[in-house]
Amino acid sequence: MSTIKPFKAIRPAADKVQHIVSHAVERYKASTIQHILANNPDSFLQVIYAAKTRKEIYSEQLHSIKNKFDEFRHNQLFKQDREPCFYVYRQVKDSISHVGIIALASVDEYEKGIIKIHEQTLAEREKKLKEYLTICDFNAEPVCLTHPYNKELHDFLLLKTKAAALYNFKADDIEHSIWKVSEADDLKKISGLFNNIPNLYIADGHHRAASSTLLAKSKKENNPSHTGNEPYNFFMAAIFADTELTIFNFDRMVTSLNGHTQESFFKEIEKCFTIAAYGDTVCKPSSAREIGMYINKQWYLLKIKDGLNKDADPVNSLDVSMLSNFILSPILGIKDLRNDKRIAFIPGVKDIEEIKNSVDGEKMKAAFCLYPISFEELKAVADIGKEMPPKSTWIEPKFESGLLVYSLSN
Image (tube, rainbow, N blue to C red; front, side, top):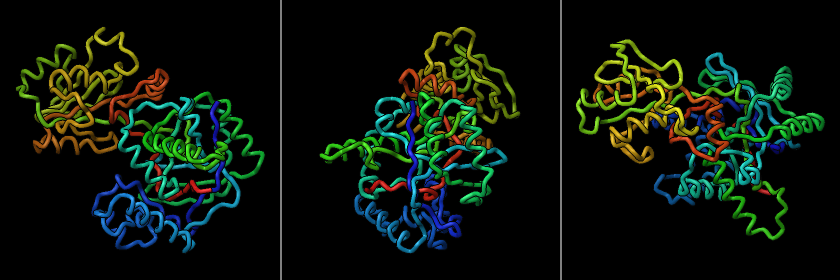
């Protein structure tokens, strides 16, 4: 049983929303951030970059962020809804529509494993985000959760999108729409439908969920009147059926062949894979268990040999794992994907020319293109309590910062 809660969102004024919301910082070039900061005083990036200098200690930076957000609220750039609501959200990118719901998810259900994970988190990053939540006192970007398709829930959310939208705007050719759901019967209906969903799965935002759990534990320990209903017991989540998500691959590029010539490298690969040459024709995998390889301005298709990996568990049966287990680790000596400087990752939403340019320009020696992981594979890994290798998936939709904000204060 999955529990979600409505909340009173702090959100931009309707006539300013397009100028306020921003992408997550990592989606911008540094020069673009500086341009926005210099030319748009209402951008949520003004909140994120409120510190006068990046040399300030972290806690001072966080106080600057909180103060800037309070200033935005004081200046009526944001307002808070009077009643708890669910928020139906739709994003349309490249003619692909994603419809889901933004609500509060339970920290307790995360701890109990009802909300399942597929990615290992870093303790140091968890602590930094926990400090962020402690001082700033709000969620400005939701954790993305997913679940198996539920027709009744899907039809209900689509019905809500027939009404006039609270927001409807475009940012960088991506359309965003939100509908507020506040009627008591509708709130009950949505909550009941989620009660029939056994588990939610984190699609994106593992560190945000983990840091919310750290915050809740700390707050609970210091609150003798703890009831379980305090704001810190929940985190903001955007929840989509698996059919409403698009999962892209995450490709790999390496800086060296670990002392191998191309000939000896290929001989090692052939122990586990068949190799088909495609010349200068781009070769991206068309199904699972295939890997595209680009080296020395030539494309090749690698296929795992029959029977080699047939008894692997859900983690080791993933294409990203097979690449690591049979090529990156034993041949190239790359065993620590998080820290080895010889490997770089590029999301599958990027143009293939970026890979070719990196290899042709000799910045990288070779590239490996992977087929996207399916929701069924993600779910299988999470269901056995395991984690996928780092940078296994790029999941869309990606959310704007500052579109809806959840206050953690009482």
